Image (cartoon, helix red, strand yellow):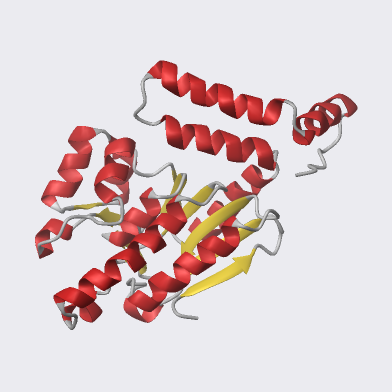
Length: 260
C-alpha cells in the first residue's frame, strides 16, 4: 500500500516491522510513500503494545535509494516546496518514534535511505550494504536529517567526508566509520534485526522509552545538562509499576510480566 507495509513479528507480538515496500523502484521515496510512512509511524508510536520496531526493506537490491528523482524531475518549484513538509514528516516519523528502532539494511542505502538508517537507534547491515549521502552531486543538501545525524554518529571529520564528497561507503568502511552497529552475512539482516528488536522488547517498556529519550536528548549537551536528563529519566521509572515488577521478578527468579 503506497510503498510501505506494517507487519507484526510472528515470534514476538511486541515487535513491529515497518517495511519500505517499493522494490520495483529500489524503494525510492515518492510523495505517496512518504505520506504513508508518516501515517504508519504515527500508528506505531501510539500503540503501547509495540516495544521495539524494525525498519526493513523489500527486494534484493536496495534498502532505499533516496528520493524518487524521476517523480521530482517532473515537478515545478512550487510542487517541490509542497512536497517538502511531506518528506519531513516521513523522516521525522521514523526519528521521533518513542520505541527503539533497529534498521535492517541490505543493498543500497543512499541519500534518504542512508538518512532513514541514521534515524534509527541501531543499524544492522549485511555484507551487501552500501551507504552514501550523494545529494551534493545533484545540486542538493541532505534534507532528511543527514548532515546532523551523520555529525552526531560519526563526528565532524567523517561526517564532512561523507556529506561533502558524496561518496559511497562499502560495508567494510561503514563499519570502520561507526555507521554500522552490527554486521551480518548477506541474506540474514532482517532476521538479525528482528532478533535484536526482540531482545529489546523483553525489557521494561517504560525504562526503555525513558532511556531512549535520555540518549537522544543528551547528544551534544554539556555533561551537567545531560546528567540532568538522565536524572529525569531515572525518576520517570524509579517509582513505576515496571520497577516494582522488575525487582520482584528478579528476586523470585522469573520472567517479568511488565504492566506497562
